[in-house]
Length: 164
View (cartoon, rainbow, N blue to C red):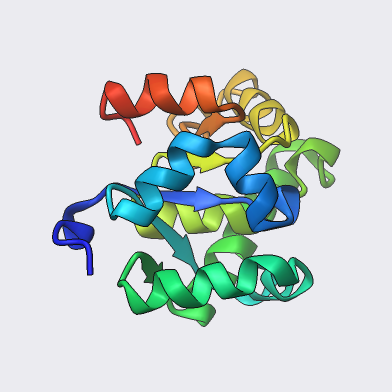
């Protein structure tokens, strides 16, 4: 087991967007290497995350191995589901309806509950959702401060500044 796994920063991985271990390695090779070395951990939990992980079948063996190495922070499913609901209610209260760019409330729930700061995803709507929250005046919202990492270059820049 990597020795510093417990102290390693935690990030949220958008498994539905990444889709496979091959894509993860191809798009985020530095993150992938850091993950296998225990320099970073992934958070998991909640009904939607579990469903998306089952759909991304080729990621399952990687998650099993990472779990054995204690590189996955597993959150209580009900807590994640409740936090996801809180985010959805915040959006509806602010805008009067759901917002297309904010269709991944489970990722924001994982960010909040894990104390993570970053989402690894190629889905730019996460950044658009964050921008929407900020522009609406919800800047101090726990959800408005997520850092979207959508390329290996961004990951390296954030990791080197220790802002995961």
